[in-house]
Length: 347
Image 1 (cartoon, rainbow, N blue to C red):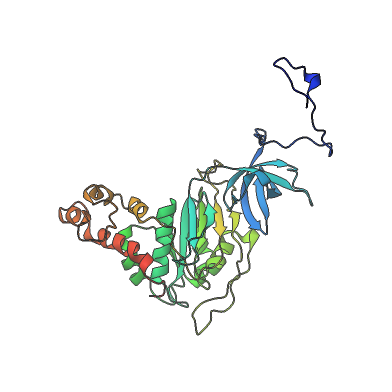
Image 2 (image 1 turned 30 degrees about the vertical axis):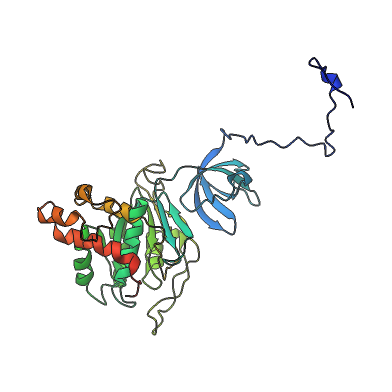
């Protein structure tokens, strides 16, 4: 056996030849400093449609991202073929930090959360006033997810020609949520789209709602150049429509542009149409973050016991309201939303 001293010569060291003739593997990954910026518009079976400048580019996730998934609304960095021509494919090498996240679980017992939309400014919750009947518990759950994820809620009530909105407005009036009431006739003549658009300009807005409420019909009125298939008939037994939107899709409002979070010009905006939902699980929600949507109540939590649920005898919010710092109806609304996790959506 040959032994080497302290002063060996490089030529004396034998190295194992690389039989494959390729470079040795390394853990050092390229920084991709010259990668182009883009926005994910939709995801379909591992292929991501992205907007890069004024081009639509098909891309796939790079291996170095591991299990980290990009979703609609994500701002990403891309390399490779960015021409947008047919049969070309770019690579997403980086997913930028998200400013907001709309998440849901299949049910309240499911530990696996699903990110629906990233970087949206607001959540438009679409509900019909009749046919199908409104589901306040589902609306409550969407509100909790919006408050938790950093999105501003917008309540859109459709089919006002079938039932008045007074009952729902009374239920959510204390939350100070902006709202729009529309009828089927207004959807057809464009008046509804104009009034809803006033709340969307310069923002990324995700639309959610269960099947049959007219969500995709409204999206089609807002973005007529990119019409999506609408729902068929509402089931007379269950009162629910059939899913026709099967994947989330970001569509630009006239004038282009995005929101403050994506750094594009103002005056435009994006509409994100999401699949119809029949359940909205909140297993991932931290109740302590919901209080941030109630700035008039949040200072009163300083006297709460540790890990207070804000719905227990020692909660300091009761004394805060009794002292006149906030409206009792606001505390009731907060506790109703926090109790949503313990109630089924059909209750």
